[in-house]
Length: 121
Image (cartoon, rainbow, N blue to C red; front, side, top):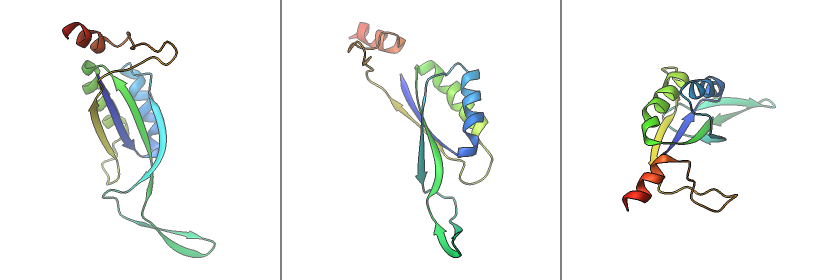
């Protein structure tokens, strides 16, 4: 099981959600974030005064999927969020060791890789 964190442009959120649904991913968390990468600074004007914008607004998607869904999920995000310009974002993939259902307090039995790992040990 993997956690996929995707940092994308805010204007690409709805397109990305639609692409995720098309590959069967319906559960995710959306977090507004600000960050800095290779994207150039901009200049903003507030009440007649210019100021540097060195943190850019982005959206962070956190998604947990079975290993077999990782390639399709990553490709869906890239296809939906890519503009070809600097500042499109990044995707990070992490291993998930366990997941628990808060309501029951038990290991989430609906995740197939967790069941396999329990049987293997």
